[in-house]
Image 1 (tube, rainbow, N blue to C red):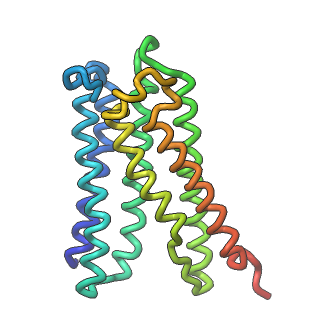
Image 2: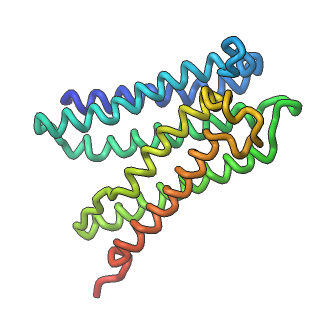
Length: 214
């Protein structure tokens, strides 16, 4: 197994560690209120932000190494997009978990609903695009990533750490704004919009893949 694939696998291991920690955080409510000073940043979330950033960095690193040293393999092509989807989707779900299990006095039902809808839309988009790619592969057609899909990923990787850090440091600026309009949430909405737009473009540009061949 070459180095890029080892890096990809290490990213998947990090992600599964995060998934396990979701349940730990849900089962121990006291961890949800462990903040750093007056910043409002949860200590556990800060750790997860660091893990997410490291995992996101490995996403860029394995691809660069594979291309530079001609180490691109079919196994890597198969595993890398799975790792990418796991990273973003698992972390977005993680953001929802504490809100679901939070005590009533700390729960924001409207914000929880909005975030849940955004997460569902983004995961649904990924499923549609992945299904389209599977159909294309059977017809020996390659669906390349486009600028809109890359913009979606960039927006997700900006919005997710901002949400994990409870809108810090923007909270000093938008602290009095409605929760749904805080800067971190706005970036999450933008990621959702770009996710839908890129998904529609993928389907429209490759609609011929879905046509039955005679």
